[in-house]
Length: 355
Image 1 (cartoon, one colour):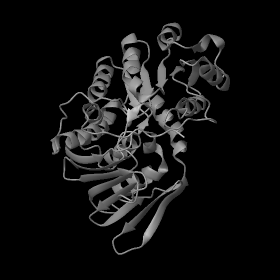
Image 2 (tube, rainbow, N blue to C red; image 1 turned 45 degrees about the vertical axis):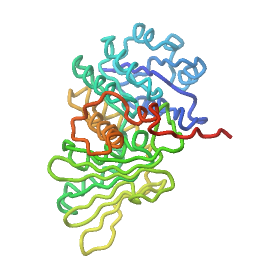
Image 3 (cartoon, one colour; image 1 turned 180 degrees about the vertical axis):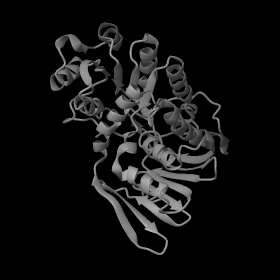
Image 4 (cartoon, rainbow, N blue to C red; image 1 turned 120 degrees about the vertical axis):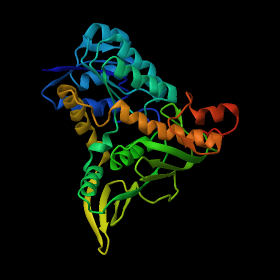
């Protein structure tokens, strides 16, 4: 079988990304699909005509596959798989429209899920109800930098896992990757509670969504494993992307630009597991996984159900800051607690002066 692939939101060409506004992730998704014999890129839609035209030229999309309106594209092309790479506040509306159209069998959306907890839940709910495979691009799961630590952890290299420490810049934008990886290390165990605090004194809106400047979050998995995350730019925090504490040793994934993973068994020195792997290299394997799970009818590792658990920790941490107390899950709010605190004046970030 050959799958017809369409894109919503191409962004500008990747040679000229506008970080915080567009990272041209559609191009990275498309590179993964292009390498597969069972996928054919047939259409793309973007509200900026010149952007979608450039994307079409790069990936050999015919003129009749170029659209500015994604709903018109769905009607005309009827793709099997849709990749969504638009700003975060648009994810829910676009994904829900795709689901309700009854056209695609699968939707692969950029992370994070949405800007409100209610929208994130609704996306996952409707995809399940309509039997549409909905996934989110937590592609780092497929990088050997994070995959190899999972393998040696499961082999018992550090005994039983006790705590996962996470260091990241923000909870929503970058932290969605790193909390997802923490969940992977904790064998996708349900999270029981979250407690957190944030500082937001300087406005930081990335891809259309607010992000705190600095934060500290703790959570507990069913079974006893603990999670802790520190966020912030220029802050040491836990000093790594991930540190896995076991009964018999430690595994670390370091935060350098070319990440590496290493293990230290009790009584021994550090042993390098993986080094020199770039994050972008994980996107094609993630696309492979999405397509192969659709073909085989199995739940993807980056499914909406799993992404929802990650999102619940993020919004749960912000809700904890709003309540000034621990939040027991399930999370029973619909809004975005960080944005609500900004709108109410409880948090008053100063706008950043443009150069």
